[in-house]
Every structure is written in structure tokens, then in C-alpha cells.
Image (cartoon, rainbow, N blue to C red; front, side, top):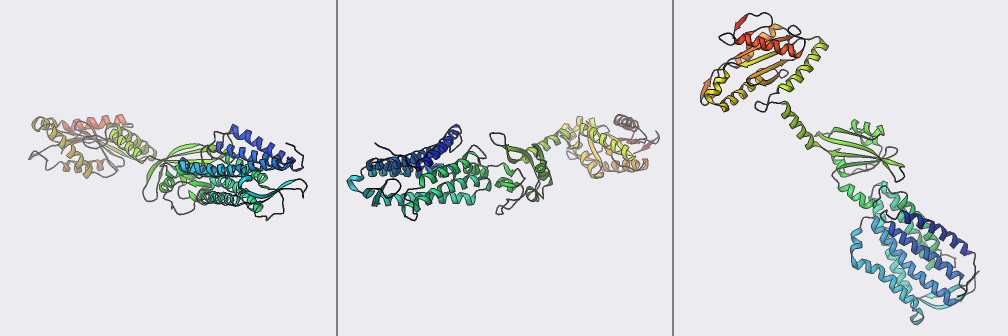
Length: 522
């Protein structure tokens, strides 16, 4: 086999060297989804460029035909590889599991190979073959046979179908993925146009420029796969996952513009699913200042947020920076987790921990916290605060006579009457057993405490129903006023407790004032 040097070989050599460099880089990054398919397509194109160069360099007609036959096979394989790559990147992997489709993709290249190498027998691929010496270097002169046009129609149809898949994805998917899809679209469109122009004779060129165009297309696709990828999984498949996940997710570019917002986030923020939300964060989150503050902070952050226009719900918001494998910033991701049920359960647990299980009144621990806060507020505003210590007289006899269930029912009824009698701002708590402490955050003076005492004792008139009987229960009440009777929690509770016992010491329900130690009838 004899060869000759033609200037065109310099272009072929340059393109092969460039594509081999891409091959080396792609091989090192082959773990990226779609990387193996791209490597296969790139290998086919490299072989195509080499085969075309060898056809031009060959001297004899038989050698040129041999290299031309190899190119026919490589053309069909390259189109199948591009289709395979497009199917992967449009999230239609399940197609590739169809055995019939895989066989069909390989069947046409196999038929092309057989017919092109046996063309001398049937002439279905090319006819009137001769060595064309009219140009700067010899080429194969021919007219195309029916099999060639059949293959061309099939390849063109597969190419158009692949372009339609990519165009559909380009139209529907968020703009964060469009750079990848656009690279695939352009990378396939250019060689398709090149082939169409060449075989229809619309160009004066005597050689097929498609291998060179394909080389440029590989560079474009290489950019799409290995530069613009946001995640090391297929973008369209990733987008599908994002669309179906229950966690709300918003992607922002480095400038704070919205790249994507999934349905879960739109539901959480009560945004319209039909509107295009490609906009700055300031516009998207204008009704959610807490989220906007997090986004504008441009720092990784996690906090709880209460969101919702019509119905407030609780969420945990995570804001993190996205980087590529080289730690180069790509943008930001805001993830919104629905913690409403967890928050409500926590509130229930907190409520249970701070309230008495029997009466549902605040318990001793919660009362002491509230009293501490009220004292701090009273000191700050120089106001009067009152505390009443209430104990049921002879409550043990109720338990001994009627049983503990009746006693529990009476304690609940006492709690109910106290809450109904007093103001909403007054805090009634069960301090222990049959003892109650009532906190009055704001009270005018001692005379006000006398009126409150009278009001409470009237609530006990008429007795309490128990097992068909009416039980008369009285209460002893002692008051303490801040700052007159004490300056801290312990002093006030102690003073009120002592006042209550002084009242209890009389024969009837008594009240001992903080003004003097003289007893009054209840």
C-alpha cells in the first residue's frame, strides 16, 4: 500500500492531537456520568479523522476504497453514540434497557459494514467508481447507490430525533442545565448539517468536511460534560430527583439569581407553579425577609423559620455554597426541611414538661421561671407585683372519704374556677398537692389584693359536686407584694406561704394581709 503526503494531512494531524488530549482528560474524568459514552464517541471520531486522512494519503483506488468503507461504518457508529449520549442526558436511561433498541442501534452499522465491503458484488452503496485526478490530490469518484441513500435517510432520521429530544429538554429544563444540553445540541447539529450539505452537493468542496466538524463538536460537548456539570450525575436525571424530592430546594448563582426552585419549595413558600421564577433572590423572597437575609448573607447557615402566608408552618433552612471538584464556587443552595410535626411535638413535650398533668396548669418549674421574668420586668418599670399562696382546707378528708379519683376531680375543678375567675394576664399554677400559687404581674396596691381575695373566695361558694353530693371546701390565701414583702422569688413565696398559714390558723377560711397581721373572716 503506497501513500502520498497532502497538505490536508496537517489539519487532520492537528485535530487528532487535540482530540487525543481531550481523550486523555476525559479518561481521567470517566467516572462522570456519560463520560464513558463520550469517550466512545470521541474514539469513533478520532478513527474517522484518521481514516479520512489515510484515504487522502493513499495512492491506489483499492486502498482509498478500503479506508472509505471504514468511514461508512464509523459514520453510523458516531450517530448511534450521539443518540446514546443524548438519551442519557435527557433522563431516558430506561430506553437503553430495551434490548431491541440496543440491537437496532448496532444493526444499521453492521449492515453498512457488510454492504460497503461487498459493494463490488452488488453496487448498492456506490457505483461507477473511478479515481478522480482532477484536483490537487486523487479522490474516489462515484455515484451513490440505493443502499447509501437508505442509510443516509436512517442516519438523518436518528439525528433529527436526537435533536428533538435535546430541544425538548432545552425548552423544559431549568437554565442551570441548559449549557450542557445546548452543547450537546450544537455538537450534533453541526455535523448533521455538514453531512447534509456534502451529500446533496450544495458545497463546492470535493472532500467531506464532516470529520473536521465532528472534531469541533467533540470540543463543544467536552465543555458541556466536563466544565458545566453542576453535579457528578446526569443533569436531567438530577433535575427529576430535585423535582420529586420532598425537601424544598432553591438554587442560586453566584450573583444571587434564582437558577431553579423545585415544587416542594414552591409549595412551602406558596408560590405559583405556573410562573417562571428565574429572577433575583430579592424579588423571589421579598415576602420572606428571614430567608432573604440568609441568602444575602452569602455564608453557610442553618436556622429555623416560620413560613407561610395563609398557614404558618415551621421549617429548618440550610444555606450552603456549591463548589466544583476544584473547590471553585458555582453558586448557593437553599434547602428547606419541613419540621412542622417535629416542632409541634417538641412544643407538646415542652408543654408537658412545664404543665401539671392533672390540672393542665403551669407547674412549679414553669411558675418559678415566669416569676423570675415578672420580677425582672417589675424592677425595670418600678411596678408592683403580687403573689398569692392558696391552700385547700381539709382536703385530705376528701381523699379519705370519697377516694383519690374524687380528690383529683376536685383539684381540676378548683383549677378551672381559678382560671375562670381571674384575668387572662394572671398566672395560676399548681405548686404541689392541694397548693396553688397565683401570680399577678401587674397589681395596683394592697387594696387590689383584698378585692382579688374576695373574688377568689366567692368562686368556692356553693361547694363542689362529688359522687352526687356537694362538698364544701374552703381555701386559705396568703398574699405577698413586691417590693414591700420581698425583693426576690424566695422571699415572696416564703412571705405568702407564712401569710397563708396564719390565715389557715383561724377556725374559718381566713386571709392574712401584707399590710398587717390582723385576720379577717373569709
